[in-house]
Each structure stands twice: as C-alpha cells, then as structure tokens.
Amino acid sequence: MPRWPSHLANFEAVGTPDYGEGRARGAAWQVAVSIRVRHNVGPRPHWATCRQGENAVDDGIRFDVDGWPPQKNEARSMFAANHRLADRVVALLRAAGTVLPTGWAPFAGPVGLDVVLRGPRRPPADATNYLGGIADVLQDKSRTLIDLTHLGDLADVAVFVNDCQISRISYREEPANHPSYEVRIFPA
Image (tube, rainbow, N blue to C red):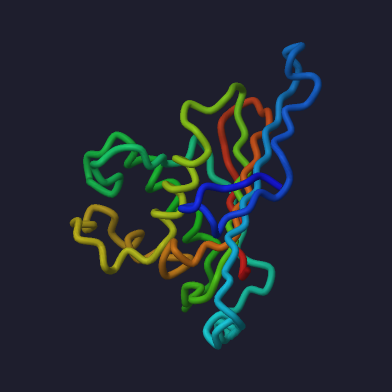
C-alpha cells in the first residue's frame, strides 16, 4: 500500500492503474483508478444511513452524456453564462435531470461517484479536473454566489447536497468512436 503525504492521510488507493499490454502497440487503451476516502471518526452518523424517503434509489442514479465532461481547471466559474464550457455544464444537468424522479431530494449522506469516460483518443483534460467539474455541477447550487438565471430550471438539478459528501470515486477511460461519459452516483 503506498504511503500518502500527511495532508492526504484520509485517502487510500484501491487497485492500481491498468494501462493494458496493448497500449504500447497502439491498441485499445484503458486507465482505471479508484480512490476511497477513509473516515476514521467512529460509527456512521444517523444522516449517513437514513434513506431518502420515497425517492430512495438503493443502487444510485446512472446516466450517459454525449461529449466531454465539464472540467474544473480555472478560477472563473464554469457556471458563468458565457463560460467556454457552458454547453458541457448544460448537457450534464440535462442528462441528470432526465433520470431524477419527480420530487427528488438530493442524497444527504455519503455518496460514491463512478465515471466512465469514452472517446477516440485520450481526453483533453485529466481525471481530477473532470471529476471536480462533474461533482461541482451535480451538487446543490442554491448557495452559489453566481447568477444562474441563464440555466433556468436546470439550476435546480442536484443529485447530492455538497460534493464533500463524495467518499468513494471510480474513474475509467475506454475507447469509443466519439466522446461520451457515464456517471453513476450511489449511496456509499
């Protein structure tokens, strides 16, 4: 098991990246990394184990999105109306909004985030920027300080309350003819 710097003491690697033998020959490629956040704070609090009422989804929410995900990599908010990634934010919110049941209450306890990124080549950004962008877009945006009126009803789409709830992450890249990605959020 790798030793982590003290500021990353609550993280542990789950498995190792698998680049596949065919990568050197130019064949199909795949990279998989999993990270699990360790919470060494005793038993899980009540809110971490309670169900979401009628809108509980025991195995989580899963959906696909065409194109590359929004990436978090600059000081300017990707929620700004004229941000260069605004179309990616809208595509992600639309895809998530179509699978959420009527009256959905965002997950309030720990959640896991699985992302499978597909494309004809290596993606233009790295995994951590994509994961951060997806997490920011799918959290509750009611406390954001930026004007979201340009998003209309999409501003209300939230799968979980805050991205600090993410306690398990899985990211994988797979070859495909055009860029797309699958997102799954589930109670952790």
